[in-house]
Image 1 (cartoon, helix red, strand yellow):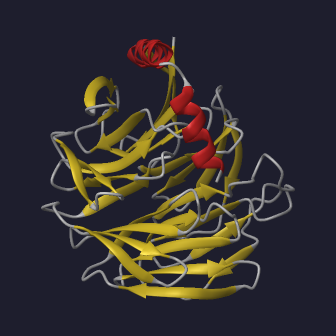
Image 2: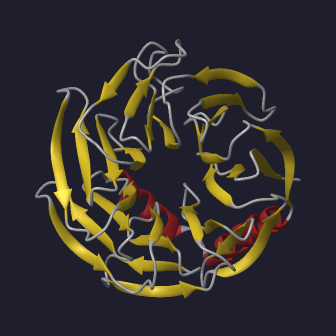
Length: 333
């Protein structure tokens, strides 16, 4: 309801005001600069995620280590030890650093051996393991409520775990190959998954049914993300494109020829969805603005594939992490 109320209020803003706000946004995005570059590990960094208060960045690495860094000065705060193999993702709980106690479960991570671990902010060791997956878990993502955790697996399924009841509540099959990425609609009723079978699916969490089939990519889908507007979904693929889908029209409305190599991640700007961030194996991240999803800015500087990216919840900072073992923070001048 909050989202619909905000959409109504946004509509009441005069057109001229909206246009000038958009021009200001474009101006600040064009001035984005790399203001911090940090060697994060001695192996590639596979994932990065901002804390909800935008003051920390979590990174996951192929060494098995996860690290927490201060933002914006990039000082190492914690090294989380527990995984013994490539970590695929680490994500902050939606209430972490805002209202959660440091002793509570604040982060979740997953790795190539099927392990999924939960972490607090006051210990360098995991507080719990989620057992069930036997092969590679590519991604973990918190449900907006913070009670449920979604995991995607190379066994062609994804699962939803209820952390309060400490049990698996959904075990969804439907992809014909491994499931790579998962995202939740901010209202909490839908999940989107992207698979190595080149298809995306949107699921109704109340019934467990697939309600929309995203067909059009020619190769694997490595990234999926819902726009805060509630009706757009972006997918990034091994076919070098990013597609934007409309939940209302149930079809693809834009295909962005985004990169020179496979697209590893897609993220909408988290407040209004005014821009889209993509990262790829061509060593760059790019910003695309709406309407029209036209290219506005290329974030170049990594010497290896961009493997992960994120936008802070206030929309002010962008993080990218790479095969070159560094992560970079980008900020408007």
